[in-house]
Amino acid sequence: MNHKPQSCPNCGAEDIIKHGKTSTGKQRYLCQNPKCYVSTFIVDYSYNGSNAYVKRQIIDLAQSGRNVREIKNMLKVSEWVVIDTIRRHESPYY
Image (tube, rainbow, N blue to C red; front, side, top):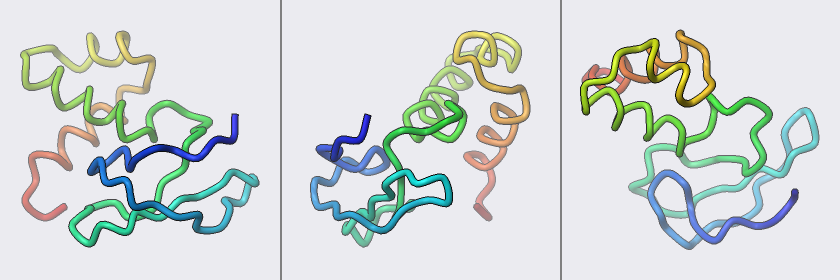
């Protein structure tokens, strides 16, 4: 499913361009918004835990009081993805 995304999944900006390919041949895109904290992304992730939308869901579920096991089972990602995402969100150094 190679289609150009309508907007950046991280910041929602519509100003995106192609930015090469990954080692597996997937198209990489670059967000032109200077305030976007993640400048490059791909559309078709092989693993769901890398998707920015899933990471946003992890943060939302954690803030609503769900524990790591519940989040892991709901989103079909590993326990370590959940823990790392929450830790990076709460840390002022990331």
